[in-house]
Image (cartoon, rainbow, N blue to C red; front, side, top):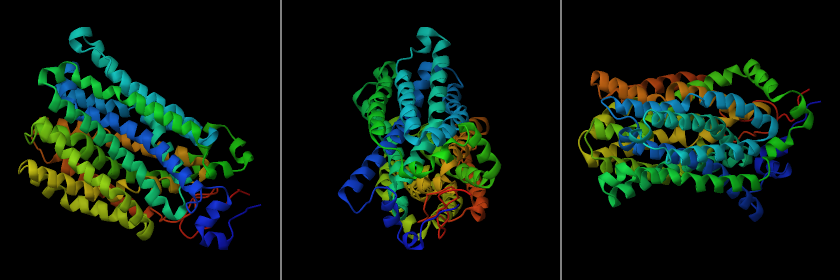
Length: 465
C-alpha cells in the first residue's frame, strides 16, 4: 500500500519535517542539530578542497621536487588529474554502500582516507633523494585521495540535503560549497603566508611540505563530528524491508536500469559545473603565472581575493535559489559564462588589478551553479539510490572532464600558444549544460522523503507497492 504525506503537511514542509523526526529550525535544539550536520558535511569538503588549493598553489614547487625538466608542469598537472582516475570507482563502491549502510558510516571512512593521503604527500622525499619513486609515491597518494573523494562529495551533499528543511535547502546546502571555497582559500592563504615569510630556497626545499600536514587535524575533527551525529531522518524513515530487499550492488543495478535519465541529465550539468570549477579554482594560479606573467604571490592573492568574494556571497545565492528556484540560477550562470568568459580572460591580461576584477566577476557568474549543488543534485534521485546516483553521475563526469581541465588547458597552451583556450573550454562545457536544461526538473521546496524522484508540488511516496 502506498502512503504519502497529507496535503496539509505537504503545504507546510517545515511542520512535515518535524513530524517525521527531522530537525525543526524553529527550535534551539533543531537549529543546533542543523549546525552540527552542516559543519560535519562542510568540513569534509573543506579538507578535500584544502588539498586541491594547496596542490594548485604549490605547482611550481611540486614540479621542482617531483617533475623537474622541460615538460615538468605537465607532469604536475598529470599528478592532479590522476587523482580523478579512481573517483568513478570510488563512486561505484562508496555510493551503493552509503545507500545500504547509511550516509554517516561511509562519510566517517572517506574523510579519514582523504586527510591521511594529503598528510602523507608532505612526507615524500624529493626526486633528488629517491629518484623515480618520488613521483610514483605522489601519484599513488593522489589515487588514494581520488578514490576516497569518490564517496565523499556525493555523500556529504546527500547528508546535508537530507538534514536541511525543504524550504531552506538552498541556503543550508550552500554552506557545503562555503566549505569548498573555505578549504581552497585556506590552502591558498597558507601558501601565500609561507611565501611571504620564507625565502625562495627554503620554500622550495621544505616549506612547501608544511601545508599538507594541516589536512590531518582537519580530517580528525571532521571524523569526530560525523561519528557523533545520527543518521539522516530521511534515510532512517525508509522501511527496513526497503533497505534489506537487495544487496548494495543490487541497488546499483536498480539505479542504472530505472534512473538513467537523471543520471545523464546530471552528467551533462556536472560537465558544465566542473570544467568551470577546475579551470577557475585550480588552473588559474598556474595560468596567471606561466601565461600572463604574474609572480607567484600576486597569482595566489588574485585567486584568494576572488574566493573571499565568492564566500561572502554564497549563502545569499543559495537562499535566492529557495525563492526563485534552482533552474533560473543555473540558466543565469551558464549563459553568463558563455557570453563573458573570453572578455574576462582578455581583461586578466591587463595587469594585477584587472586580473583580480576579472577573476572575481567570473567567480560571481559561476556562483549560482556552485551554491546550489547540494540542493540540486541530491533531489534528482529518490532516497534508496540517492547516494549512489549522485556519487556515480558526479564522479564519472568530473573524472572525464572536470579534473582533466587543468591538464588539457596546459597541454593545449604549451602545444599551440593559444592562451584563450581555457575560456573556450568553459564555454563549450556551458553549451553542454544548457542542452541538459530542458530535462532538469525544478525541485526547490520539494520533499526528499520517499522512494520516488522528488519534484516541486509532488507528494512524497514513503513506500513502494
